[in-house]
Image (cartoon, rainbow, N blue to C red; front, side, top):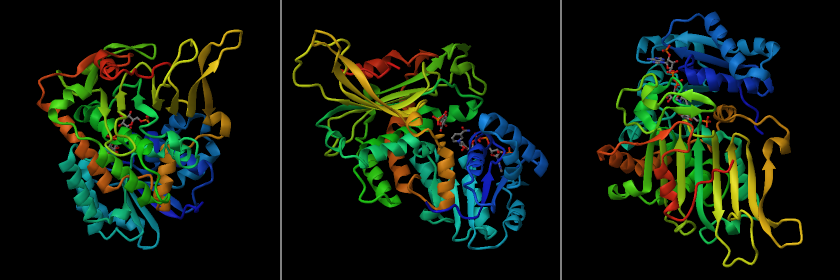
Length: 484
Ligand SMILES: NC(=O)C1=CN([C@@H]2O[C@H](COP(=O)(O)OP(=O)(O)OC[C@H]3O[C@@H](n4cnc5c(N)ncnc54)[C@H](OP(=O)(O)O)[C@@H]3O)[C@@H](O)[C@H]2O)C=CC1
Ligand SMILES: O=C1O[C@H](COP(=O)(O)O)[C@@H](O)[C@H](O)[C@H]1O
Protein backbone atom coordinates (compact mmCIF):
# COMPACT_ATOMS: atom_id res chain seq x y z
CA UNK A 1 0.00 0.00 0.00
CA UNK A 2 1.36 3.38 -1.06
CA UNK A 3 2.04 5.61 2.01
CA UNK A 4 0.00 8.78 2.29
CA UNK A 5 2.24 11.67 1.18
CA UNK A 6 2.50 15.03 2.98
CA UNK A 7 -0.48 17.14 2.06
CA UNK A 8 -2.48 20.35 2.44
CA UNK A 9 -6.21 19.67 2.48
CA UNK A 10 -8.35 22.79 2.09
CA UNK A 11 -12.03 22.23 2.92
CA UNK A 12 -14.32 24.89 1.46
CA UNK A 13 -17.38 24.75 3.73
CA UNK A 14 -15.09 23.55 6.51
CA UNK A 15 -17.51 24.60 9.25
CA UNK A 16 -20.57 23.07 7.53
CA UNK A 17 -22.60 20.00 8.39
CA UNK A 18 -20.77 17.56 6.11
CA UNK A 19 -17.34 18.68 7.29
CA UNK A 20 -18.25 18.39 10.96
CA UNK A 21 -20.27 15.19 10.74
CA UNK A 22 -18.27 13.18 8.20
CA UNK A 23 -15.06 14.70 6.83
CA UNK A 24 -13.27 15.74 10.02
CA UNK A 25 -14.33 12.58 11.93
CA UNK A 26 -13.01 10.49 9.00
CA UNK A 27 -9.67 12.33 9.12
CA UNK A 28 -9.53 11.89 12.89
CA UNK A 29 -9.98 8.11 12.49
CA UNK A 30 -7.09 7.93 10.01
CA UNK A 31 -4.97 10.09 12.34
CA UNK A 32 -5.84 7.79 15.26
CA UNK A 33 -4.83 4.74 13.19
CA UNK A 34 -1.47 6.44 12.52
CA UNK A 35 -2.06 6.60 8.77
CA UNK A 36 -1.60 10.34 8.21
CA UNK A 37 1.89 11.79 7.77
CA UNK A 38 3.01 14.24 10.47
CA UNK A 39 3.13 16.95 7.83
CA UNK A 40 -0.50 16.71 6.76
CA UNK A 41 -2.38 20.00 7.24
CA UNK A 42 -6.12 20.59 7.22
CA UNK A 43 -7.27 24.12 6.47
CA UNK A 44 -10.99 24.88 6.79
CA UNK A 45 -12.35 27.90 4.93
CA UNK A 46 -15.75 29.59 4.80
CA UNK A 47 -17.34 33.04 5.02
CA UNK A 48 -17.83 33.19 8.78
CA UNK A 49 -15.26 35.18 10.75
CA UNK A 50 -13.82 32.67 13.24
CA UNK A 51 -10.54 32.54 15.14
CA UNK A 52 -8.50 29.38 14.85
CA UNK A 53 -9.25 28.66 18.53
CA UNK A 54 -13.02 28.93 18.07
CA UNK A 55 -12.93 26.68 15.03
CA UNK A 56 -10.75 24.10 16.81
CA UNK A 57 -13.19 24.13 19.75
CA UNK A 58 -16.07 23.48 17.32
CA UNK A 59 -14.23 20.54 15.81
CA UNK A 60 -13.49 19.19 19.28
CA UNK A 61 -17.20 19.19 20.14
CA UNK A 62 -18.16 17.66 16.81
CA UNK A 63 -15.62 14.84 17.19
CA UNK A 64 -16.73 14.14 20.74
CA UNK A 65 -20.22 13.53 19.27
CA UNK A 66 -19.45 11.84 15.97
CA UNK A 67 -16.38 9.79 16.83
CA UNK A 68 -17.89 8.91 20.22
CA UNK A 69 -16.13 5.95 21.84
CA UNK A 70 -13.12 6.30 19.51
CA UNK A 71 -12.42 9.82 20.76
CA UNK A 72 -9.11 10.02 22.60
CA UNK A 73 -7.93 13.18 24.40
CA UNK A 74 -4.21 12.46 23.75
CA UNK A 75 -4.75 11.92 20.04
CA UNK A 76 -7.01 14.95 19.88
CA UNK A 77 -4.08 17.19 20.90
CA UNK A 78 -1.96 16.01 17.97
CA UNK A 79 -4.91 16.08 15.57
CA UNK A 80 -5.73 19.67 16.59
CA UNK A 81 -2.20 20.71 15.55
CA UNK A 82 -3.10 19.86 11.97
CA UNK A 83 -6.09 22.23 11.94
CA UNK A 84 -6.33 25.81 10.81
CA UNK A 85 -9.12 28.14 9.74
CA UNK A 86 -9.32 31.00 7.26
CA UNK A 87 -12.20 33.29 6.32
CA UNK A 88 -12.71 33.22 2.54
CA UNK A 89 -15.85 34.23 0.71
CA UNK A 90 -15.83 31.97 -2.32
CA UNK A 91 -17.15 34.78 -4.51
CA UNK A 92 -14.62 37.43 -3.45
CA UNK A 93 -11.39 37.27 -5.45
CA UNK A 94 -9.39 39.34 -2.91
CA UNK A 95 -10.04 36.80 -0.13
CA UNK A 96 -7.96 34.20 -1.96
CA UNK A 97 -4.67 36.03 -1.46
CA UNK A 98 -4.50 34.92 2.19
CA UNK A 99 -5.24 31.36 1.12
CA UNK A 100 -2.41 31.43 -1.43
CA UNK A 101 -0.05 32.74 1.28
CA UNK A 102 -1.11 30.01 3.69
CA UNK A 103 -0.41 27.31 1.11
CA UNK A 104 3.02 28.52 0.03
CA UNK A 105 4.57 27.70 -3.32
CA UNK A 106 5.97 24.16 -3.21
CA UNK A 107 4.78 22.80 -6.60
CA UNK A 108 5.41 19.17 -5.63
CA UNK A 109 3.35 19.20 -2.44
CA UNK A 110 -0.03 17.41 -2.70
CA UNK A 111 -2.77 20.00 -2.42
CA UNK A 112 -6.44 19.02 -2.23
CA UNK A 113 -9.34 21.47 -2.48
CA UNK A 114 -12.44 19.77 -1.13
CA UNK A 115 -15.54 21.69 -2.25
CA UNK A 116 -18.05 20.91 0.50
CA UNK A 117 -20.34 23.80 -0.42
CA UNK A 118 -23.33 24.28 -2.65
CA UNK A 119 -22.36 23.44 -6.26
CA UNK A 120 -23.37 27.01 -7.23
CA UNK A 121 -19.98 28.04 -5.83
CA UNK A 122 -17.83 25.47 -7.65
CA UNK A 123 -17.20 27.59 -10.74
CA UNK A 124 -16.24 30.71 -8.76
CA UNK A 125 -13.94 28.73 -6.46
CA UNK A 126 -12.08 27.07 -9.33
CA UNK A 127 -11.76 30.35 -11.24
CA UNK A 128 -10.37 32.16 -8.19
CA UNK A 129 -7.95 29.37 -7.30
CA UNK A 130 -6.54 29.49 -10.82
CA UNK A 131 -6.36 33.28 -10.85
CA UNK A 132 -4.21 33.26 -7.74
CA UNK A 133 -1.92 30.56 -9.16
CA UNK A 134 -2.93 27.90 -6.64
CA UNK A 135 -3.49 25.10 -9.17
CA UNK A 136 -0.24 23.15 -9.50
CA UNK A 137 0.17 19.75 -11.20
CA UNK A 138 -0.01 18.16 -7.73
CA UNK A 139 -3.37 19.81 -6.99
CA UNK A 140 -6.67 17.88 -6.88
CA UNK A 141 -10.22 19.09 -6.49
CA UNK A 142 -13.02 17.10 -4.87
CA UNK A 143 -16.59 17.86 -5.93
CA UNK A 144 -19.41 16.97 -3.55
CA UNK A 145 -22.75 15.82 -4.86
CA UNK A 146 -25.24 16.72 -6.22
CA UNK A 147 -23.38 17.79 -9.33
CA UNK A 148 -26.09 19.78 -11.03
CA UNK A 149 -29.82 19.25 -11.10
CA UNK A 150 -30.02 18.04 -14.69
CA UNK A 151 -27.75 17.20 -17.60
CA UNK A 152 -27.24 20.80 -18.74
CA UNK A 153 -26.28 22.12 -15.29
CA UNK A 154 -23.96 19.13 -14.69
CA UNK A 155 -22.29 19.86 -18.04
CA UNK A 156 -21.89 23.53 -17.11
CA UNK A 157 -20.17 22.64 -13.83
CA UNK A 158 -17.96 20.11 -15.61
CA UNK A 159 -17.00 22.72 -18.21
CA UNK A 160 -16.14 25.34 -15.59
CA UNK A 161 -14.16 22.97 -13.39
CA UNK A 162 -12.56 21.44 -16.49
CA UNK A 163 -11.35 24.87 -17.61
CA UNK A 164 -9.06 24.90 -14.55
CA UNK A 165 -8.38 21.26 -13.70
CA UNK A 166 -7.56 18.34 -15.96
CA UNK A 167 -9.89 15.34 -15.69
CA UNK A 168 -7.30 13.32 -13.74
CA UNK A 169 -7.27 16.07 -11.10
CA UNK A 170 -11.06 15.99 -10.58
CA UNK A 171 -12.54 13.69 -7.92
CA UNK A 172 -16.36 13.54 -8.13
CA UNK A 173 -17.34 11.91 -4.93
CA UNK A 174 -20.11 9.37 -4.40
CA UNK A 175 -19.58 8.16 -0.88
CA UNK A 176 -21.38 4.87 -1.56
CA UNK A 177 -18.36 3.80 -3.59
CA UNK A 178 -16.24 4.19 -0.45
CA UNK A 179 -18.34 1.73 1.55
CA UNK A 180 -16.50 -1.50 2.38
CA UNK A 181 -19.34 -3.73 1.18
CA UNK A 182 -19.40 -2.05 -2.20
CA UNK A 183 -15.74 -2.86 -2.66
CA UNK A 184 -16.43 -6.31 -1.29
CA UNK A 185 -18.94 -6.77 -4.06
CA UNK A 186 -16.08 -6.42 -6.54
CA UNK A 187 -14.11 -8.94 -4.47
CA UNK A 188 -17.09 -11.31 -4.49
CA UNK A 189 -17.60 -11.01 -8.23
CA UNK A 190 -14.04 -10.75 -9.51
CA UNK A 191 -12.09 -12.58 -6.79
CA UNK A 192 -14.16 -15.80 -6.81
CA UNK A 193 -15.12 -18.10 -9.64
CA UNK A 194 -18.24 -19.57 -8.05
CA UNK A 195 -20.76 -16.83 -8.83
CA UNK A 196 -19.60 -15.75 -12.28
CA UNK A 197 -21.49 -18.44 -14.26
CA UNK A 198 -24.68 -17.60 -12.34
CA UNK A 199 -24.31 -13.82 -12.56
CA UNK A 200 -26.48 -13.24 -15.65
CA UNK A 201 -29.95 -13.27 -17.12
CA UNK A 202 -29.98 -17.07 -17.49
CA UNK A 203 -29.95 -17.61 -13.73
CA UNK A 204 -30.99 -14.33 -12.15
CA UNK A 205 -34.70 -13.55 -12.41
CA UNK A 206 -34.39 -10.03 -11.06
CA UNK A 207 -32.29 -7.77 -8.85
CA UNK A 208 -33.50 -5.45 -6.08
CA UNK A 209 -31.50 -2.49 -4.77
CA UNK A 210 -32.94 -0.82 -1.68
CA UNK A 211 -31.55 2.10 0.30
CA UNK A 212 -34.14 2.81 2.99
CA UNK A 213 -33.59 5.40 5.71
CA UNK A 214 -35.46 5.93 8.95
CA UNK A 215 -34.15 9.50 9.01
CA UNK A 216 -36.18 12.37 7.64
CA UNK A 217 -34.68 15.52 6.12
CA UNK A 218 -32.77 16.35 9.35
CA UNK A 219 -32.50 20.13 9.14
CA UNK A 220 -31.60 20.00 5.41
CA UNK A 221 -35.17 20.76 4.33
CA UNK A 222 -34.35 23.64 2.04
CA UNK A 223 -31.65 21.70 0.18
CA UNK A 224 -33.72 18.51 0.08
CA UNK A 225 -36.81 20.19 -1.24
CA UNK A 226 -34.87 21.39 -4.29
CA UNK A 227 -33.45 17.91 -4.86
CA UNK A 228 -35.86 15.10 -3.90
CA UNK A 229 -35.04 11.42 -3.68
CA UNK A 230 -34.35 11.03 -7.41
CA UNK A 231 -31.57 13.64 -7.48
CA UNK A 232 -30.37 12.99 -3.93
CA UNK A 233 -30.08 9.20 -4.08
CA UNK A 234 -31.07 7.46 -7.35
CA UNK A 235 -29.06 9.58 -9.82
CA UNK A 236 -25.86 8.85 -7.91
CA UNK A 237 -25.77 6.23 -5.14
CA UNK A 238 -28.30 3.70 -6.45
CA UNK A 239 -27.13 3.92 -10.07
CA UNK A 240 -23.55 3.42 -8.91
CA UNK A 241 -24.61 0.31 -6.97
CA UNK A 242 -26.43 -0.94 -10.05
CA UNK A 243 -23.23 -0.44 -12.07
CA UNK A 244 -21.13 -2.44 -9.60
CA UNK A 245 -23.64 -5.33 -9.69
CA UNK A 246 -24.10 -5.32 -13.44
CA UNK A 247 -20.74 -4.34 -14.95
CA UNK A 248 -18.49 -6.73 -16.86
CA UNK A 249 -15.19 -7.72 -15.25
CA UNK A 250 -12.68 -4.96 -16.04
CA UNK A 251 -9.51 -6.02 -17.81
CA UNK A 252 -7.47 -4.63 -14.89
CA UNK A 253 -8.37 -3.05 -11.57
CA UNK A 254 -7.19 0.33 -12.77
CA UNK A 255 -9.26 3.47 -12.57
CA UNK A 256 -10.20 3.82 -16.19
CA UNK A 257 -10.82 0.13 -16.81
CA UNK A 258 -13.34 0.06 -13.93
CA UNK A 259 -14.95 3.33 -14.94
CA UNK A 260 -15.20 2.26 -18.59
CA UNK A 261 -17.21 -0.80 -17.54
CA UNK A 262 -19.54 1.24 -15.31
CA UNK A 263 -20.08 3.71 -18.14
CA UNK A 264 -21.14 0.89 -20.49
CA UNK A 265 -23.84 -0.11 -18.01
CA UNK A 266 -25.14 3.44 -17.64
CA UNK A 267 -25.30 3.72 -21.42
CA UNK A 268 -27.12 0.37 -21.65
CA UNK A 269 -29.97 1.48 -19.38
CA UNK A 270 -33.08 1.47 -21.54
CA UNK A 271 -34.37 5.06 -21.67
CA UNK A 272 -37.90 5.50 -20.36
CA UNK A 273 -40.26 7.34 -22.66
CA UNK A 274 -42.56 9.91 -21.03
CA UNK A 275 -45.49 7.55 -21.56
CA UNK A 276 -43.73 4.71 -19.72
CA UNK A 277 -42.72 6.70 -16.66
CA UNK A 278 -46.16 6.38 -15.01
CA UNK A 279 -46.05 2.59 -15.18
CA UNK A 280 -42.39 2.05 -14.33
CA UNK A 281 -41.81 4.53 -11.53
CA UNK A 282 -43.49 5.42 -8.24
CA UNK A 283 -42.75 8.56 -6.25
CA UNK A 284 -43.97 9.08 -2.73
CA UNK A 285 -43.94 11.64 0.05
CA UNK A 286 -44.21 10.76 3.74
CA UNK A 287 -46.95 12.00 6.03
CA UNK A 288 -46.84 12.02 9.83
CA UNK A 289 -46.33 8.64 11.48
CA UNK A 290 -44.13 6.77 13.90
CA UNK A 291 -40.52 6.21 12.99
CA UNK A 292 -38.06 4.23 15.12
CA UNK A 293 -40.63 4.27 17.93
CA UNK A 294 -41.17 8.06 17.92
CA UNK A 295 -43.97 10.17 16.42
CA UNK A 296 -42.60 12.23 13.54
CA UNK A 297 -44.12 15.04 11.46
CA UNK A 298 -45.00 14.68 7.83
CA UNK A 299 -42.65 16.04 5.15
CA UNK A 300 -44.80 19.13 4.58
CA UNK A 301 -44.47 20.04 8.27
CA UNK A 302 -40.66 19.80 8.33
CA UNK A 303 -38.76 23.11 8.68
CA UNK A 304 -37.91 24.74 5.36
CA UNK A 305 -40.51 22.85 3.29
CA UNK A 306 -42.96 25.10 1.42
CA UNK A 307 -46.62 24.19 1.78
CA UNK A 308 -47.92 22.07 -1.05
CA UNK A 309 -44.41 20.90 -2.04
CA UNK A 310 -44.49 18.04 -4.58
CA UNK A 311 -40.92 16.93 -3.85
CA UNK A 312 -40.61 13.15 -3.61
CA UNK A 313 -39.10 11.55 -0.49
CA UNK A 314 -39.48 8.05 -1.95
CA UNK A 315 -38.82 6.51 -5.36
CA UNK A 316 -39.28 2.99 -6.64
CA UNK A 317 -38.59 2.16 -10.26
CA UNK A 318 -37.95 -0.64 -12.70
CA UNK A 319 -34.75 -0.31 -14.72
CA UNK A 320 -33.72 -2.49 -17.64
CA UNK A 321 -30.21 -3.07 -18.91
CA UNK A 322 -30.20 -3.85 -22.59
CA UNK A 323 -27.02 -5.84 -22.93
CA UNK A 324 -26.11 -9.47 -23.58
CA UNK A 325 -25.72 -10.34 -19.88
CA UNK A 326 -28.85 -8.69 -18.45
CA UNK A 327 -31.55 -8.30 -21.12
CA UNK A 328 -34.79 -9.61 -19.60
CA UNK A 329 -33.64 -9.34 -15.96
CA UNK A 330 -35.25 -6.28 -14.38
CA UNK A 331 -33.46 -4.22 -11.74
CA UNK A 332 -35.86 -2.72 -9.19
CA UNK A 333 -34.50 0.32 -7.34
CA UNK A 334 -36.10 1.75 -4.21
CA UNK A 335 -35.09 4.49 -1.80
CA UNK A 336 -36.93 6.61 0.73
CA UNK A 337 -36.79 8.67 3.88
CA UNK A 338 -38.76 7.74 7.01
CA UNK A 339 -39.05 4.12 6.01
CA UNK A 340 -39.79 1.24 8.36
CA UNK A 341 -36.14 0.16 8.63
CA UNK A 342 -32.81 1.80 7.96
CA UNK A 343 -31.29 -0.68 5.56
CA UNK A 344 -29.24 -0.71 2.37
CA UNK A 345 -28.94 -3.92 0.42
CA UNK A 346 -28.78 -5.58 -2.96
CA UNK A 347 -30.62 -8.83 -3.53
CA UNK A 348 -30.12 -11.13 -6.51
CA UNK A 349 -33.03 -13.52 -6.94
CA UNK A 350 -32.18 -16.73 -8.77
CA UNK A 351 -34.69 -18.35 -11.08
CA UNK A 352 -37.09 -21.03 -9.84
CA UNK A 353 -36.26 -24.67 -10.40
CA UNK A 354 -38.06 -26.31 -13.33
CA UNK A 355 -40.16 -28.49 -10.97
CA UNK A 356 -40.61 -29.14 -7.26
CA UNK A 357 -39.67 -32.56 -5.86
CA UNK A 358 -40.13 -31.84 -2.15
CA UNK A 359 -42.73 -30.27 0.08
CA UNK A 360 -41.47 -27.05 1.64
CA UNK A 361 -42.20 -24.86 4.65
CA UNK A 362 -41.95 -21.14 3.82
CA UNK A 363 -40.21 -21.68 0.50
CA UNK A 364 -38.30 -18.76 -1.02
CA UNK A 365 -36.32 -18.66 -4.21
CA UNK A 366 -32.55 -18.98 -3.83
CA UNK A 367 -31.21 -15.51 -3.38
CA UNK A 368 -28.03 -13.68 -2.52
CA UNK A 369 -28.47 -10.78 -0.11
CA UNK A 370 -25.61 -8.28 -0.08
CA UNK A 371 -26.03 -6.09 2.98
CA UNK A 372 -24.39 -2.64 3.04
CA UNK A 373 -26.11 -1.28 6.14
CA UNK A 374 -26.56 -1.58 9.07
CA UNK A 375 -24.58 -4.83 9.56
CA UNK A 376 -22.39 -5.42 6.52
CA UNK A 377 -22.41 -8.92 5.15
CA UNK A 378 -23.60 -11.51 2.68
CA UNK A 379 -26.31 -14.12 3.00
CA UNK A 380 -27.05 -16.90 0.54
CA UNK A 381 -30.58 -18.25 1.02
CA UNK A 382 -30.91 -21.94 0.21
CA UNK A 383 -33.47 -24.69 0.89
CA UNK A 384 -32.36 -27.45 3.27
CA UNK A 385 -33.99 -30.53 4.75
CA UNK A 386 -35.55 -29.94 8.13
CA UNK A 387 -34.31 -32.63 10.63
CA UNK A 388 -36.83 -35.44 11.08
CA UNK A 389 -38.52 -38.36 9.33
CA UNK A 390 -40.10 -36.29 6.58
CA UNK A 391 -38.34 -34.97 3.53
CA UNK A 392 -39.51 -31.46 4.30
CA UNK A 393 -37.47 -28.48 3.09
CA UNK A 394 -37.21 -25.04 4.65
CA UNK A 395 -35.15 -21.94 3.87
CA UNK A 396 -31.81 -21.43 5.62
CA UNK A 397 -29.24 -18.67 5.20
CA UNK A 398 -25.48 -19.11 4.81
CA UNK A 399 -24.31 -16.00 6.58
CA UNK A 400 -21.11 -14.01 6.35
CA UNK A 401 -20.92 -11.07 8.72
CA UNK A 402 -17.86 -8.98 7.87
CA UNK A 403 -17.44 -7.45 11.35
CA UNK A 404 -17.47 -10.87 13.04
CA UNK A 405 -15.24 -12.46 10.42
CA UNK A 406 -12.55 -9.79 10.30
CA UNK A 407 -12.89 -8.42 13.86
CA UNK A 408 -11.71 -5.04 12.67
CA UNK A 409 -13.41 -1.68 12.84
CA UNK A 410 -14.92 -1.25 9.36
CA UNK A 411 -13.52 1.83 7.64
CA UNK A 412 -16.13 4.54 7.00
CA UNK A 413 -16.61 5.59 3.39
CA UNK A 414 -15.10 9.07 3.77
CA UNK A 415 -11.99 7.67 5.50
CA UNK A 416 -11.22 5.61 2.45
CA UNK A 417 -12.15 8.25 -0.10
CA UNK A 418 -10.28 11.17 1.48
CA UNK A 419 -7.05 9.23 1.63
CA UNK A 420 -7.59 7.93 -1.91
CA UNK A 421 -7.67 11.56 -3.09
CA UNK A 422 -4.45 12.37 -1.25
CA UNK A 423 -2.84 9.25 -2.73
CA UNK A 424 -4.14 10.16 -6.19
CA UNK A 425 -6.34 7.09 -6.68
CA UNK A 426 -9.33 7.79 -8.90
CA UNK A 427 -11.01 4.38 -9.22
CA UNK A 428 -13.71 5.08 -6.62
CA UNK A 429 -14.64 8.47 -8.07
CA UNK A 430 -16.94 9.25 -10.96
CA UNK A 431 -15.61 10.33 -14.31
CA UNK A 432 -17.33 13.11 -16.21
CA UNK A 433 -18.85 10.78 -18.82
CA UNK A 434 -20.34 8.53 -16.11
CA UNK A 435 -21.97 11.45 -14.35
CA UNK A 436 -23.43 12.75 -17.59
CA UNK A 437 -24.66 9.30 -18.64
CA UNK A 438 -26.48 8.98 -15.30
CA UNK A 439 -28.17 12.36 -15.83
CA UNK A 440 -29.08 11.39 -19.40
CA UNK A 441 -31.07 8.42 -18.08
CA UNK A 442 -32.65 10.19 -15.11
CA UNK A 443 -33.63 13.45 -16.79
CA UNK A 444 -36.61 12.21 -18.88
CA UNK A 445 -38.11 10.69 -15.72
CA UNK A 446 -37.82 14.02 -13.91
CA UNK A 447 -39.34 15.82 -16.88
CA UNK A 448 -42.27 13.41 -17.05
CA UNK A 449 -42.93 13.89 -13.32
CA UNK A 450 -42.75 17.66 -13.66
CA UNK A 451 -45.15 17.60 -16.59
CA UNK A 452 -47.62 15.32 -14.82
CA UNK A 453 -50.53 16.71 -12.85
CA UNK A 454 -50.16 13.81 -10.35
CA UNK A 455 -48.61 14.47 -6.95
CA UNK A 456 -46.33 11.97 -5.22
CA UNK A 457 -48.28 9.19 -3.49
CA UNK A 458 -48.58 9.75 0.22
CA UNK A 459 -47.17 7.12 2.62
CA UNK A 460 -47.12 6.98 6.40
CA UNK A 461 -43.72 7.61 8.00
CA UNK A 462 -42.37 4.34 9.42
CA UNK A 463 -43.73 2.13 6.61
CA UNK A 464 -42.26 0.70 3.41
CA UNK A 465 -43.64 3.46 1.20
CA UNK A 466 -46.76 3.79 -0.95
CA UNK A 467 -48.84 0.75 -1.92
CA UNK A 468 -48.10 1.57 -5.56
CA UNK A 469 -44.47 0.48 -4.97
CA UNK A 470 -45.70 -2.99 -4.00
CA UNK A 471 -47.88 -3.05 -7.11
CA UNK A 472 -44.93 -2.01 -9.32
CA UNK A 473 -43.00 -5.17 -8.51
CA UNK A 474 -45.90 -7.57 -7.92
CA UNK A 475 -47.17 -6.93 -11.47
CA UNK A 476 -44.07 -8.83 -12.60
CA UNK A 477 -44.71 -11.66 -10.11
CA UNK A 478 -42.08 -10.56 -7.52
CA UNK A 479 -42.14 -9.01 -4.03
CA UNK A 480 -39.81 -6.62 -2.23
CA UNK A 481 -37.37 -8.24 0.18
CA UNK A 482 -38.59 -7.05 3.57
CA UNK A 483 -38.05 -9.94 6.01
CA UNK A 484 -35.40 -8.38 8.24
N1 LIG B 1 -24.55 17.14 4.91
C1 LIG B 1 -24.59 15.95 4.30
O1 LIG B 1 -24.90 14.91 4.89
C2 LIG B 1 -24.24 15.86 2.86
C3 LIG B 1 -23.88 16.96 2.12
N2 LIG B 1 -23.52 16.81 0.81
C4 LIG B 1 -23.14 17.99 0.02
O2 LIG B 1 -22.04 18.66 0.62
C5 LIG B 1 -22.13 20.03 0.40
C6 LIG B 1 -22.14 20.75 1.74
O3 LIG B 1 -23.27 20.33 2.46
P1 LIG B 1 -23.50 20.69 3.99
O4 LIG B 1 -22.24 20.66 4.73
O5 LIG B 1 -24.63 19.85 4.42
O6 LIG B 1 -24.02 22.19 3.87
P2 LIG B 1 -23.96 23.34 4.98
O7 LIG B 1 -25.00 24.32 4.58
O8 LIG B 1 -23.97 22.81 6.35
O9 LIG B 1 -22.52 23.96 4.75
C7 LIG B 1 -22.24 24.83 3.67
C8 LIG B 1 -20.86 25.40 3.91
O10 LIG B 1 -20.55 26.29 2.85
C9 LIG B 1 -20.05 27.50 3.41
N3 LIG B 1 -20.35 28.60 2.49
C10 LIG B 1 -21.56 29.00 2.06
N4 LIG B 1 -21.42 30.06 1.23
C11 LIG B 1 -20.09 30.31 1.14
C12 LIG B 1 -19.32 31.26 0.44
N5 LIG B 1 -19.88 32.19 -0.36
N6 LIG B 1 -17.99 31.21 0.58
C13 LIG B 1 -17.39 30.30 1.37
N7 LIG B 1 -18.07 29.37 2.05
C14 LIG B 1 -19.41 29.38 1.94
C15 LIG B 1 -20.79 27.63 4.74
O11 LIG B 1 -20.10 28.40 5.68
P3 LIG B 1 -20.38 29.95 5.90
O12 LIG B 1 -21.84 30.13 6.00
O13 LIG B 1 -19.61 30.26 7.16
O14 LIG B 1 -19.79 30.58 4.74
C16 LIG B 1 -20.74 26.17 5.20
O15 LIG B 1 -19.51 25.89 5.78
C17 LIG B 1 -23.41 20.26 -0.41
O16 LIG B 1 -23.10 20.24 -1.79
C18 LIG B 1 -24.23 19.04 -0.08
O17 LIG B 1 -25.16 18.73 -1.08
C19 LIG B 1 -23.48 15.60 0.20
C20 LIG B 1 -23.83 14.46 0.89
C21 LIG B 1 -24.28 14.49 2.25
O1 LIG C 1 -25.85 11.52 0.00
C1 LIG C 1 -26.70 11.30 0.83
O2 LIG C 1 -26.61 10.17 1.55
C2 LIG C 1 -27.28 10.05 2.80
C3 LIG C 1 -27.32 8.57 3.11
O3 LIG C 1 -26.00 8.10 3.26
P1 LIG C 1 -25.68 6.87 4.22
O4 LIG C 1 -24.24 6.62 4.04
O5 LIG C 1 -26.06 7.33 5.60
O6 LIG C 1 -26.55 5.75 3.74
C4 LIG C 1 -28.67 10.64 2.75
O7 LIG C 1 -29.23 10.66 4.05
C5 LIG C 1 -28.62 12.06 2.23
O8 LIG C 1 -29.95 12.56 2.08
C6 LIG C 1 -27.92 12.09 0.88
O9 LIG C 1 -27.69 13.46 0.52
